[in-house]
Length: 571
Image 1 (cartoon, rainbow, N blue to C red):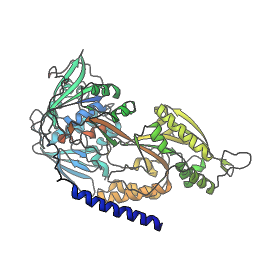
Image 2: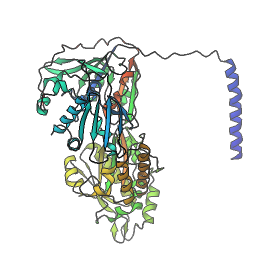
Image 3: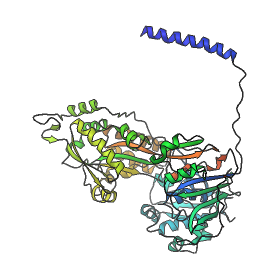
Image 4: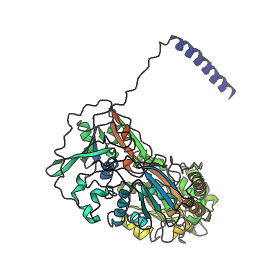
């Protein structure tokens, strides 16, 4: 070791001398100026999906509509990349100490695209539509607003009265606001079928300019910058969204120079996009977690109640192989139920890398050994490590389940894997607690607040979403306190404590967080992206985007007109 240190020291000194000599011979440094942000130009994006309606109360299940609505309709609250709430239409807000009353003040100079002022009455009206949207608005959102009283205090102020303290309340304010003067005389059903959803009026940084149609079908949506926006206007003058059914078709449009960006890059085009010159790729963690749940209350598999057995199965999964071979590298290894990069995340130091030897040793120490004539199955007190692993009936999940099965059988377990359609997986197995182990994807889109309570609090073990039936008094106490205090620092401490308990007991095996990737020409500057809470968050910095070259692409199609297109709008 001493010789090695001397070698390193000699190398360092030699490098230092050479570095000084080279430095003395260097020419005067030249300053490289970054391009100045400039206004104007057209950005054309290939949007994967189909047009339905441009209305933020009707877009919960259509990400393509939701992406465009993000530019057209502003929200009371938006969330930064760390999940901290920021005002958009809301200039300020405050709450009572007990967290049951919230007062909001709107920007006085906020205007609709037709020039009328945005008022508190617009917010109250939008909430009434959320309450009425049966079959269109998610049921949990409808039910939530039934219990909240909303008061219009003035044109620019309103009040929310909650029946009890609920810290994640601000999550529910991240919806696009509708103009009451446009839709106020309509019922919800009338609004769903209204042609006004084809020529929307919002309050966002971009306003609707027109639709491009072909044979009666909508091919593109054209937006232009809203010059009277109440905040700093966007730099790019016009944005055109062209619809494509698949990422492959969108990628072909880019290669044909018809677009400057591709909204979604998946495995089918990833390899080509990676080597394309002049194209920048942006990747961000999605609000999803894939994990394995154990039934901790099934007496036929009592070994799942043992922490060391669960930990052994965790060490025994080659998660990196799953990410590399099945997901083409498009995921991040997970270490718990709260997303990294957010204000609530805490690094517990849990380091569960693939280690078959450590896994086997944990099982041996727990008393599960190979004995008698059985040389491949571990048992303890005549209880064998034999169980069934269910998984969603897709090709990708099948490949994951087969890797997990092979890994665990190398430990001395007998694992039968079975595919189940997703709807059946939820109703017949998760909700019925009718499973032994199950591979699931937890989708937390549009919910920036971490709030792990529904999935891990002991109260939710019966009838709720605590499908594993984890029964931890300590963890539940932290979760229940974090739900009622509005102090962000105190909540972060409570969630830190919860994550420590979770990492010690490992009630479920967190596998990976998938990532979302999109691509934009390097001619477009100012693009920034952090962890996503929904795909439309990639436009969080849209007002800062600008074109290094502002000329319109030769293939850009102008809107045929600015009148509603005769098209069938289905619910």
